[in-house]
Image 1 (tube, helix red, strand yellow):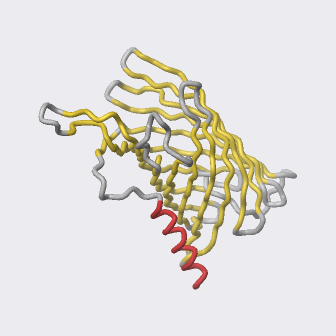
Image 2: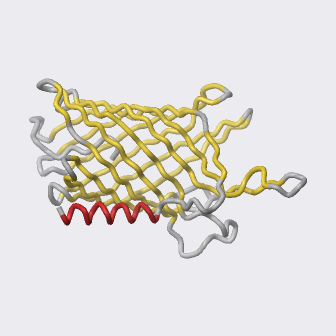
Image 3: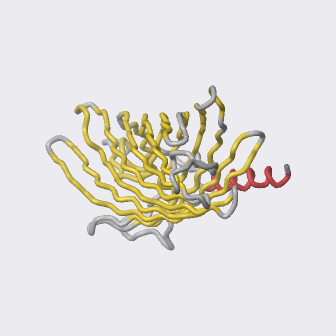
Length: 271
């Protein structure tokens, strides 16, 4: 019990370091609702490891009608040292199109990532901790970015009949920029880049197929060029938290090495 409480306290402390302070004035903006669909294919190996790949499409439902936001492809591999510890890596390729009035821009981004994961029992729930480092390669006119990401989650399995299992889960992920010093063109750039809350219910219909509907709120922490009124009052810009509500569904199909199914540690669809 003591070791469990120490892990929870350590994870909470790390998360606290990545949480923006309330003492600094911050503006809040809300984006339109986003919808997301992800198709996943997973290959489980008999030693417990697995390969996986996914394709995701995401749309924004704004006042200008439905517009294409981005989609990406991703491949990854994860190795298990034990029931509780695993590590691996993945690579994501983004195709991003931003629509604003009659202006449209298409950009390509590449983001490799390495990760370390721990999962253990806390009061009958599975408590997951995922720490990762990634590097985002951006177009030539933008700086490449390196980030550290910490994700904490709680989940539990429930049997429904003989075959179906439900997997309610809640998770929070924070991403922080890694740099030795602020860039010259953005000396006040915020350290915390992004925070994502996600609540889901995984529905495992068979050994091969499961689907996971979810809701999420993504917050991007930014500093925009401040603008003032005639009296010198800040009317826009400055430290801004941009919130984006998301509804989505993940569809995953699992293949097994040797074709016969076997027991293994199955991770959530949010790898």
